[in-house]
Image (cartoon, rainbow, N blue to C red; front, top):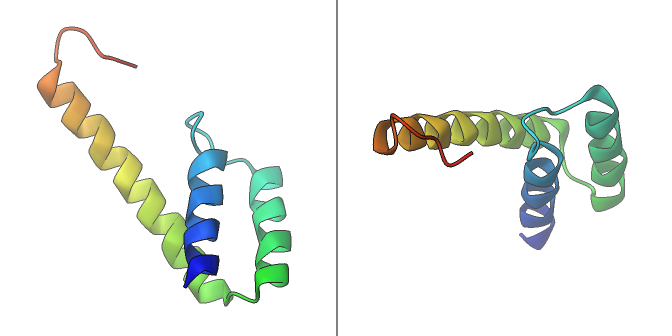
Length: 70
């Protein structure tokens, strides 16, 4: 569903600076109410984004142990 893809992209954009702030979560919840996505799906996507981000940082640290790209 395109709505879920849009939601995941919005979560990723909000968390791109390394923080997913409360006001960003509130805006996501507003968006979700418009898109009609269940809260359980939102929570799963938020958890997935967080795990994906941690894994990406681990990979970067393994590939570039002396000098991080970020």
